[in-house]
Length: 452
Image 1: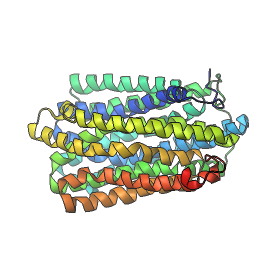
Image 2: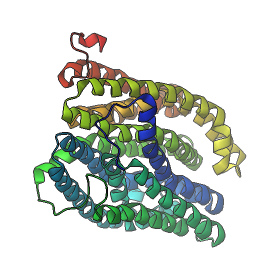
Image 3: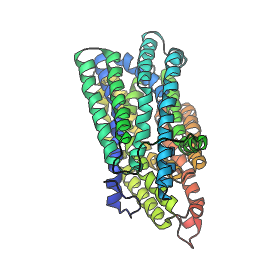
């Protein structure tokens, strides 16, 4: 049965509702993590550096799926909250078609521009060849990867978060098994890793197409849509912050790689890649919770249930605070073991990675609040404020930090850049959430904004 989003959610119920989406995001991150493990251990650090170098541009394209999914689910959930299920289904169907068409266009363009992109990023020789090969193969399944991202949000909006989790589990396990076969046993190297990811993404984006094509016990399923560009525009505007976040994070990753090539060389890029692989899991928890809880906020906003909106907000902030401390402690404790999984074959690289990881892990104290704040305003259909938070977090604060801090602290400044960027974002986000509390009704009547 679908979960009734109109009911009151206790803390335990909220955790239970969002847990499948959190797990879904973790499994999604497994695609690149597993690829990184097998590429590093079976193809070497040059191939690993090549994957790390080209992955940010690939993820920039995939971020359009998150934009359509988060922005579209906010619009659809609000429409459901208003009681117009038929219109919600038309919106949903239109947005999925748009996601697939856009993904196909981006895949074709990405294929042709992959080689010059690798060159612009600084790749030369074998590293350039490997980066181009891996990037082009990622374009094969790009339309389905974009659909996978979109469906992650729509499964939650449909009240079926567990179904979304099941799909990602199947896709993730398939990717892991095929990586073992293609790379570990058959020795296909980068081609094998990319092919395993292709098949996993085809499953992740294809199964939901079949599921929603059949009418089930859910308010959402495919119907004949009406072409409404304002609907597409509204969904894209709502989700623009999530797209900006992912694109900007990819741009920061590119800048990181550029700085590390200058200061350390190939080993620096490989170390950063290892940190990103494992940090993806930590970030996936925050992202999964934000995506999983957003439709609840959107529904209550559509229903104008301010009491429940306030309850969801405070419970969310409390859960994120606890998770942030736990993840920081895990990052400090597991820095060396996690690094050893990928680069145990190189003692110097292992030492560099473990030290860098402990510095980088400071960002886990702030990351969750920054991610949730942006998703919160997306849920309220305020794409402008959400995009502003994301823009400041990545394209302003983190970019400035990764440029300036190395001048002051050397290599350590690079690893601390994300922490500084997220900490400044939290200050801005808190100010905006307090200032707009009265407008959206999640502040108790009679309270002053400063007490929100």
